[in-house]
Length: 172
Image (tube, rainbow, N blue to C red; front, side, top):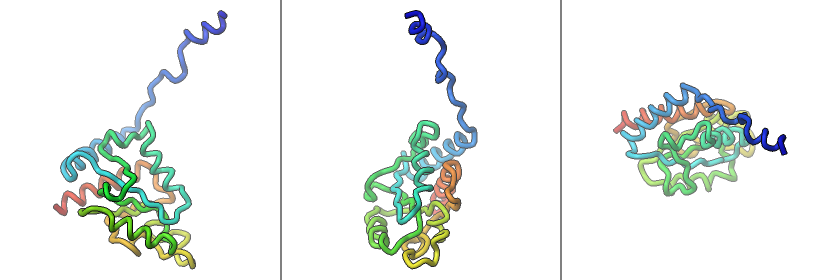
């Protein structure tokens, strides 16, 4: 009984708050300001895997975990392309995914932006020139921004989204 009570009363290991990365906080504040000026309240992203190895998807999913928590910066991921402002393409575009990828892009309302994330989406990566792959995302859509890396880190993805916001604001 005493052992159980001492376990309940002693300081927990998880009580210390995690220190956040200052670069992520700075980029996030700038994204929030840019999103407010360009899109109003928030930006909706539809992630499209066109034939990847899931490394980039893991990093994109990390953006939604409690450490990065990109929703506090005005970035949301949506399930439907009809609700999306940005199409985030990952993976080399395979022949099998070409028609579905085109339909996804066409379903998006205008103005629409396309971001190629990862080496495979940027230029086909190690799969470029193989029989099953068309190439990078620019083989199907007009790509507004490329974020290279295999895979790019969440910080690099956020910095790329900030660059997209600034580019969109300068084109207004």
